Image 1 (cartoon, rainbow, N blue to C red):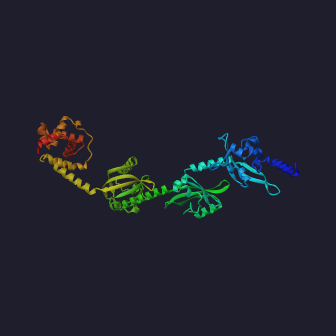
Image 2: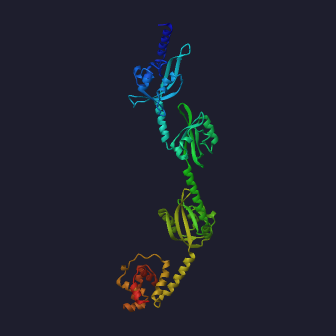
Image 3: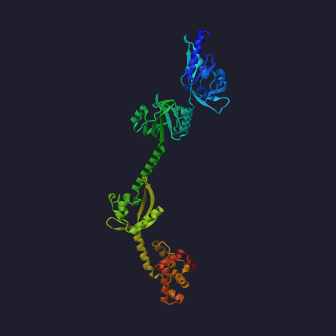
Length: 498
């Protein structure tokens, strides 16, 4: 053996001794890609105990181990790391997935760099592959990738070295309408996620420092025009040993639309509230404090807004009866609304007017309120009372009226007593029913006494008992009571033919 060959073999044995204990895997090969040696770490990264398992050369290695890039593209034989080193290529950070062809369920991830040892003349005499196990790192990255893509919260990741986006999830694409190609590879200057941010200078400063960007409102421009209101925040993170910034977003557009719709609705309510000629008041449902009144209410009561707003209904004391006031709000608390309740309202100066009140529950600026609408019926009620009084007077002796006229007068009187008493016709005795029937025919007490062959005092007692049972106070009211129930209709038609 020549001295040169001996020196070369000695150098290789020394090299093997040096690298055998390294935690990184090392594979040594001849220039013709024959695999010479591998340390224990390199064998363990392939699931082997013996170097024979790697194969004699690159071709045999490729038969036993299928290599793919992280994008799932398989490597051709000439792209295998040993082939690339043999062709004089140098690389420092190649990541491949390694799968034994005999066991497709096992996969490792290797990070490789190359080294070519040369002789004194500078010619390659030994090829070196240095491997590190990146399986756990790849698994963690894969979990992050899945989590990032599955997260419904919109997000993008930009690389801090060149401020270009390297990842985007589906949530961001759906929120903005961008497609993936419109985001990946673009810079933050082209797709500005801090557009019109409320503290943009601070956000840009933090982005430059690679520091956390606090939450703030911003406007995201959309690819089809327009913008979207969002909350944006930035969180620094490392990806593949590169410093990056994760931008996450909350879409505020639905809230802005809801607020706009609410504001417009409240504006329309305010306008109609002010302009309606019907007296209207709004009070807080909780403490019954007046929130607002319209001009018609102030006109009818004589109060100013300063005398009403902020004060409770009880404090103002414009409802004439405290019992009626309590009943009004008890009904509203229980049912949420009421329709057509008679109420006496005291004007400023203590004049009392008759009103019909309707009310409903409304929400104003997230506060539950009662809306009270009042109609002044003082004049109408006065006219009705005067009409009833006149009818009562002329019907004291209705014997000379025709039956038709009696019914019309009784019907006119009934507007003041719309509720029917809770009494049935069968609750009357036979004699009381006879008396009621003759009253409905328009007969006076004397005529009823003659018809029934009773004493006048007996008839008067029967009439009083009928009034008491029916809860009425006049002949006209008794006639209305019977007419509302369709009683004695046949007798009236027979005695008053057309």
